[in-house]
Image (tube, rainbow, N blue to C red; front, side):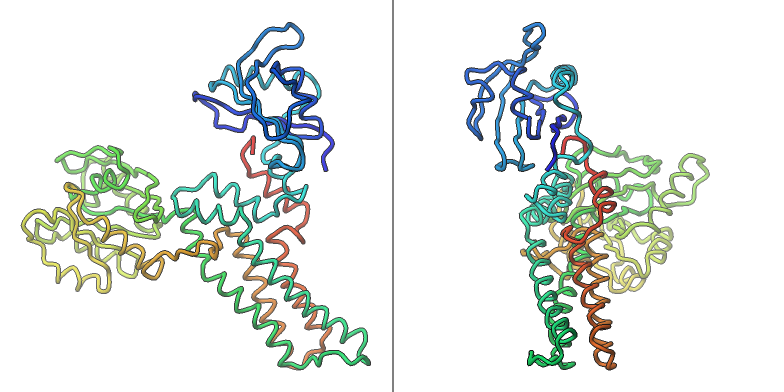
Length: 459
């Protein structure tokens, strides 16, 4: 438990209807009371109540702002401490004035990044996996990513990890009894028994790892490059997907001179979308720089959306681009499908066999569902599963699961090789410890410091 009281702005800085200042700690209510003038004194306010108040400077009695003040008494709060949240008028000046006033009194200090969530972790309200999911929830770029993060905040992954660790600790108990009291009549620890128990946990770890790539995609988005020669509709596609006029669209080839980035969702799949300059040979110095950046984006992207003009015959630049995309994750978009077809689709299939081809009319907004399905086929085996709770969306968690997986593989192989049980026990314990690092049960202080340092101020 912490013995000091902290405060920070808990909402984004800028102009808004309201802004929230959060205060947490054993003296939160007492320290905030002199600044709050309300019908019911703050010290007498019941837990989980909200009341209208004026925020005043106790030294002068001057009213600084009007506010709604919420009181949450320990342990029924986010941090499991006494919490006061002051909802003042949004805007940089009023919020800073109220916060500075609270900090000037000496009983409250400014919170460090992530300190509210860290206190929730230290006080046992949430574990480390849940704490990390809080930031995933805040940074969600799609509704499905938000649902995955919310499941993790609620403890879905933590409960699963807890179950696996319980099975391993039971196995460790059997191993230790056999090592320490070999003369006792305990359950026979044969190779088959160790393999069975370790194998059960190993199978479930591998099932979790299967979701890691999908979870990463939901969390970070698929880096997607829209590529094609000039004036085939790349920028129009970006605008359609973004739902706004993000890129300039004209009939003049070469309008896009640089890579434009935008986060969008297609059928619930988050894409980190890069609209690139049209790839062609050009003598224009600025456009040539844009083309080189487009080629770099083409190399780095996880997914290529190759836009072709269906109303024109295949151009040599199209053939070159299709050849460069060989072996890559790609979807070919035949744009302008509302016009008479002049492009030979069979030639496209020959140049890029096995790649999904989606007819679209970006101008008419046609083909969006088909595009979403093609992307789902590439990255999610045809569909996004409804059981978001099974997703492992954090790279740290995935790395620790892989280490636990390897430790159990070593335990099984050592058992088969006739290695002494006390050596096998080391591998099983390693797996148990790696799983514990996910939830924070066996995580070191330096790791915890590193994780919470990445949190935003006020969370």
